Length: 103
Image 1 (cartoon, rainbow, N blue to C red):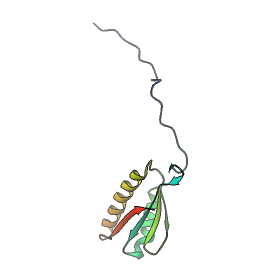
Image 2: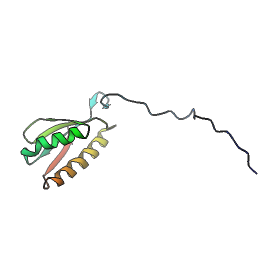
Image 3: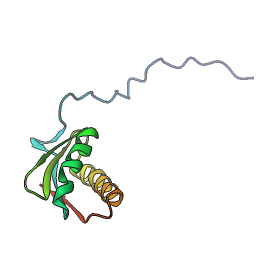
Image 4: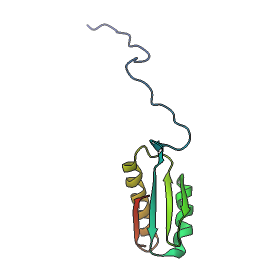
């Protein structure tokens, strides 16, 4: 009834996604945000958890840190994922008040 058609092994119209090494950036600007919490004694724990989640986090005050999302492809993706992370972390630590904003 039907014939067997051979499909090409690779479609020349579709390119594989490029592999990027190192930190992804939007232009020449790192995708960084500031996360502030209202319980300064918990900041070291937040920084450690962000580091374990493949983010670069550095305290900038007693209640805030600058976070570079190492895998985000855009600022909106970085903000979305870091807001989700920060709210989940805050909920697990007694509903710590948290604010996430672009750096």
